[in-house]
Length: 96
Image (tube, rainbow, N blue to C red; front, side):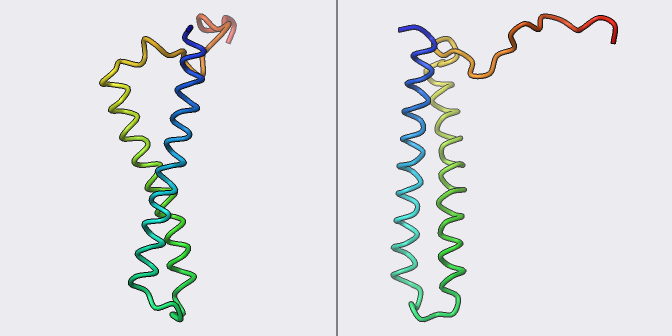
């Protein structure tokens, strides 16, 4: 496999991992809210909104930490192609 295929597979796997982490955090928050918050509380919409924010923000944070460690441990830079590359620009333009 070449670097572009490796990059595509890595992105697909990392996206699936991020969605799984988000679902786990969502279910954990939902369990905690169901367990400890009164269902007839007037603050229930606030708790549900906080649940969404924690699941999204927490998954982003955990995803970033895990991906940095995996990238450093397995030296993925040599196996993956850069997602954003600078093509056609090798130096500063003249005349500016």
